[in-house]
Image (cartoon, rainbow, N blue to C red; front, side, top):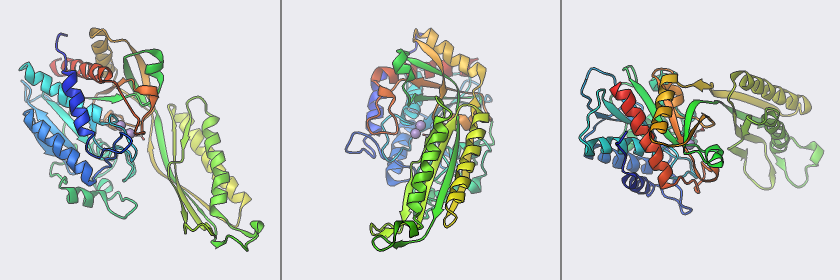
Length: 410
Ligand code: GLV
Ligand code: MN
Ligand code: MN
């Protein structure tokens, strides 16, 4: 328990990475497979190589830095997260998990310490799912949730595919996705919620994650003139959407305190201030930790769309489920390794369920998995103001180090 990461070096790496895609408000816009993502990947690759890691890239563009173990026959213990960000993202969501994993390797290098099992540092492609829904698609292919063709054919609003963008930025790797044994997977992440900070806990021992369902919604009416057309004669797709969205939010309120509903994208056509919108498309993100409640929320949503259709027969209401990641429970032994690591380091901790999606959620299907959370200021994330203190980052990296040692040397 005497090994400790270099917190200063970890912080410097986080701040250097955050210069790539930096926004005016102090955040990061490094959306997946953009030129800035390529720059972030190039820097990460260089850092991995400097740390003596052998870097491979799989067909989904996920990057793995391999550090040999004393026993080459043992499956590697994998540490990491993602370097892609939200459009108004922060410096820590994803980057902390990747760079803390690298810091673990650098620390072991400093102390010339070899683990029994090899270690791998991973940067998963497209965790956020902003450009290419769904989220966690590369870890999903790795875990066999999606096939490779599905992953590569995800398409952004401009019609570009994930596969073509991987080619464009030079990260369409050759390594087959998945189909190899891993010993364990550990992901460090900021909590992205308020609990740890409010309770003054330094470490969250993540026992699992809540479920997420993504939908595309569409309402079709008819364009008409904003002036002469009487209000009652309109088939206004946006007005109908506005009424429907009240019901969508109510579904989450009806499942308080854990239910969540978010409409994060909404587009109206033709997009003219003096034309009544004839078409609206929007996204819905619904979450809850309990799968049966998730299903009840899904049912309520479908009923809300049907009711809206009944009230407005002149319009069309379409609801299309595009993704469901069910609630997940992490591996008890891996979770315990995190708990023991925190205790051994004298860091206060509590068990916590993740409200956000993470690659670990899919990887838990194929490898013993756990996550470590550290507090972030005011629980704010997916926001340029997102902040985790140097101490919190260092705490998390130390827990990652010791949980990894426990798994790799067991
Ligand atoms: C990932 O950031 C998510 O949507 O939870
Ligand atoms: Mn994340
Ligand atoms: Mn995120």
